[in-house]
Image 1 (cartoon, rainbow, N blue to C red):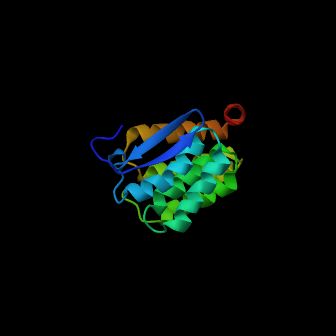
Image 2 (cartoon, helix red, strand yellow; image 1 turned 135 degrees about the vertical axis):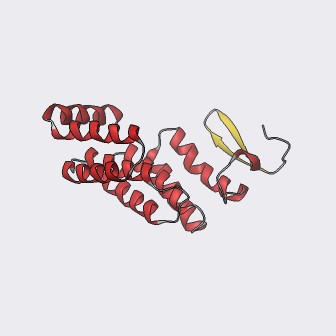
Length: 169
């Protein structure tokens, strides 16, 4: 339950009701009204209903534009990727990258490169992985990008990628 706050919203998930309290979210600029509006997308996501989750996030941005656009677009891109709508996911990720955000967007750039690889744009993914390698200061990220580049370059690696995409669907 909440930590002393009586301000909450509620949403139903089959078999249970979940309460969301004002103190449950630690995202800058997020108040209870915003959190309740986001909860619909999160509930659909938790149920594996990726298309409905992406639609709920779009509805959130129509109703409350400009507040958390970068984060909501990223959530939307994640759901579209999970639903195998790679072009839609790329559009959402690009919108998230151009919206004001608190971080440098490196994780988002990695998601964009991975999404390009998922739908077969290996050349585009390789270029993005190169850009990430040249701009990051994190050695782990550099190593991971080099590994993923190797998987994209080798036919065996591409087969592993295809198999992992098929398993996720």
